[in-house]
Amino acid sequence: MIPDLSCAQSESESNRRRVVITGAGALSALGSTTRELWEGLLANRAGIRTVSRLVASGIVVTTGGEVDAVPHDQIDRDYQIADRAIGNALTEAGRLHQECGFIWSTGLDTFQAGANDVAGFVHRSAGQCFSALAEPFVEPKRMIAAACASGTQAVGEAFRLIRNGRIDACVAGGSSVMLTPFYLIGFAGLQAVAADNGGPPSSACAPFDRRRKGFALADGAGALVLESLEGARCRNVKILAEVVGFGMSQDAFDLNRPCEDGAGAELCMRRALHDAKIQAFEIDAVNAHATATYLGDLAEAAALRRLLGSDWQRVPVSGVKGAIGHAMAAAGAIEAIVAAQTVQTGIVPPTVNLFDPDEGCELSHVIGEPIEVDARTVLSVSFGMGGQNAALLLRRFSE
Image (tube, rainbow, N blue to C red; front, side, top):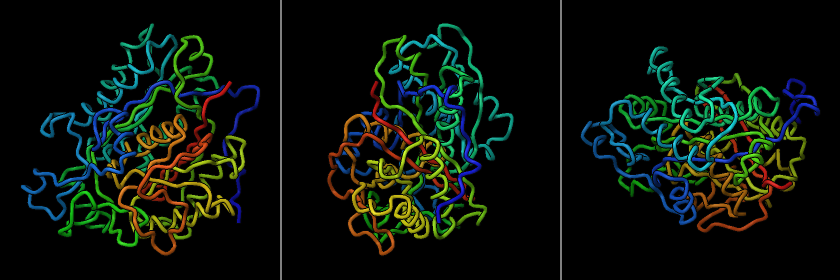
């Protein structure tokens, strides 16, 4: 059954501005730049490894996606990782000449940090935008907390604000520091994290694979600079991709488990299509959430097969968490950057550690080697705890 789209947000045609991405910065287990991330994915390389400080802590899970760019004992490490990603994105975008918003995602970190710390984080991180602005004005400043869907939602909210003329440009994304006993013990208790099993640490996370046991937690950050097409043209800067659609939904099914048939995931993807005013057959590739949890992968695959219809065997699907782990609030932003790379290059990277797709996970998976396709439109999706779902549609820019 096709979900009801009557509550999907829309703006009048006359008010809709085109929104483009002009800068991106990613820190992940594959490196401290977008280039290192992309090259690692194309090489089918996993950055997940044994983390020595976790071994010393004596907990059951000692593997994860660690970011080396910032020392693990650095005070306020979340901010330091975010700072690097934001700086890289602003450097690529160049000097902005319009008012710029700041929308950042924190996922579960909001609840650990406390309201005062979060307010301080927004203030400090937003301050990084000042150096790239002709006028020191950053508004709105928002924090998004939607678990694993946070990063995608932050980019989507920025897209909507620019499209409807509320702001002209925005830095959006997310950061997370998940490799702590607090998170690892908690997610191990939920049986969501792949526990150490004596095999190579790099094989810990195997999305959609028959042998999958859960995700590997990770640190990371992803930042994107979005702006109106008019602003990008005035600055004569390179356009990485165009954002054309965004959708959200809420399962209201279970605190930890997704709706088993993937109905909530399907709804947010259909809302993104409705928002972009395109049909499912126009999707050329999918950047999947692909956490390697048993129920999550089954629900996502079912939702994608229904969405794509008879095209599900044609449209290539890949995910990045087998390579870099699950950085929660940062995951969707990093994956939006990967989707933008696919739009630019026409290359879809393989899903690292996927060798034998499980029954019920049937899709047109990219296995072993990257493939080249005419990826004009890419769907990037995130499905969070508590049934928080978000989807972005990115398109290759053309006049």
